[in-house]
Amino acid sequence: MSPLALAVDIGGTKIAAGLVAPDGTLTEHRRTATPDGPSIVRAVTELAGPLAARAAICGIGTAGTVDPRGRIASANDLIRGWAGTDVKGAAERALRLPAVVLNDCHAAGVAEARIGAARGARTALVVAVGTGIGGAVCVSGRVLTGATGSAGALGHLPAPTAAGVRCPCGGLDHIEAHASGPAIERAYLAATGRALPLAEIGRLGSPVITGAATLLGRVLAGAANLVDPDAIVVAGGVSMLGRALFEPLRAAYLAEALPGPSAAPLLPAALGADAGLVGAGLHALSHLGDA
Ligand SMILES: [Zn+2]
Image (cartoon, rainbow, N blue to C red; front, side):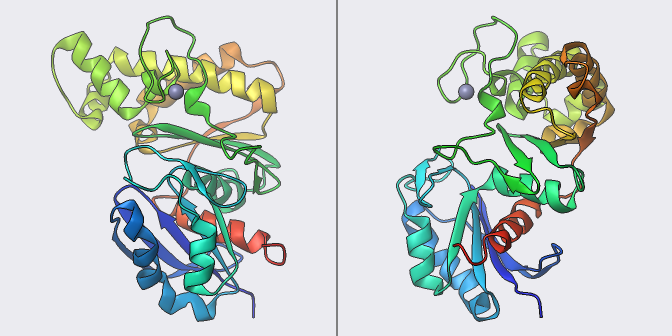
């Protein structure tokens, strides 16, 4: 019988767990609300503990930057008290399984690269555009984590504009400050005086979306010029805007990308909200034996 991974996804509002098979099949899916940082390990143990005996390894995807030792190097205010937590150590003690910990965008990237929209691509660039903008560079189904765990942080690449908009990280005019869901809503409010949710702005086909998509397309082209991917996957809530986003995104991408990378298709994500959970499991299974 193929080994199973106990997968856990720790997000700002919910924690999900389940068993993941090598083909990405998810079973025993369960979830609970995310408590404050210090109580998360106990919540994970209560949720996932009953499944541990059926798994060979545990894969944990979590919000925040995960350092090479499986600790939370930094996390935003979404989960209070989470930064500094030794997730790998605490999970291994509580679940009595070897554990592999990675950033949740990295986990979702692994899933899209292995069984999702970029399945079969040797090098995949995955960008998640939602409340923030995250990303992952995956090569042969493995994610590049980098020296400190922050590789693939597409949201903090400079946008080609000097509008002077502050990014949540403190930087100026990073693409997250211009093309995340909240950034698009703020730009719409500034342009029209009307506060509307993103989906409504999308239905109206506002030039604000064209502007954000154009900046994002140029940034993705810059990233693609660096890594020369076979495919680029666009995930997250903003990707749900569909053609209103993808048409100007593709046009800006093609105008900026070098002849080689310009051939990489820009694809909507194939997996839904479970991508991070499934990817954490697949990532762990690929580390079976060296965790
Ligand atoms: Zn930033």
